[in-house]
Image 1 (cartoon, rainbow, N blue to C red):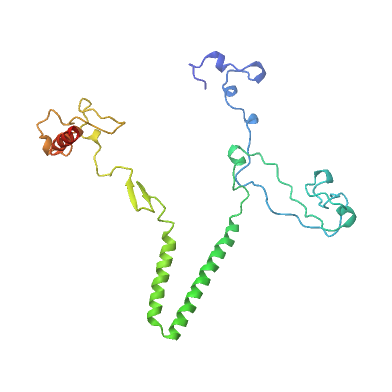
Image 2: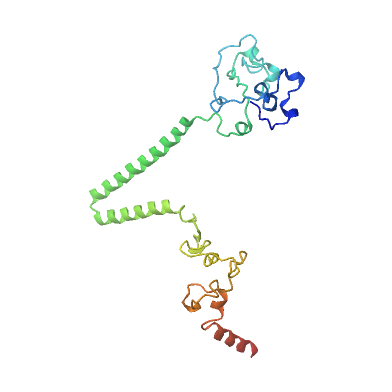
Length: 262
């Protein structure tokens, strides 16, 4: 069904489309013209070969002896005497990579063809190192027990624990906590975010005709509760100017003026 509000020049298909009546199929993407890309499971095989031959085979590369390419396509160093005549040091046959149709993300996928099981070797290596450290510590404790140095053992245990803690925390010292910037060398913490319990100045009074809030300097100079019966001294916030012109602030300003005038 075609909406009656659709104009005729849109619903009427061109003569070469082959439609006998009004339709909207020619306004939509045609399936035969859409590009199909390879799935995420399709990837290149990397680092694998088909095997190495023991002698030169007919039709193989005359330079390296691989069956999967010719001499003009060989990427190895040109030999003085090719494998065709020596039948020695024959290169392994390569695997023909599939012709994949990759999209924008597939062409830039850095993990294409990566086997997660390869990371197991790294895990096993670190496990062996930790096991060697544990055995070394046990042997050291046994030697100390046989020598009777119990007090020294306790001191060594404390030193080793402190060393382990230092090793674990030396990278954590340089990390910044959320909302703070910590200088690990000077031990100075600078807060760059306001405290969550503090109420923003523009939320003190939601009346648009109340005190003006300057978002650039984050200042509200006038009293947001101006015109009410509330005493400014009893309010939690009565404007930035109230803090500047109350208490000993004025007295301090007068003393500074006297000093500068002298």
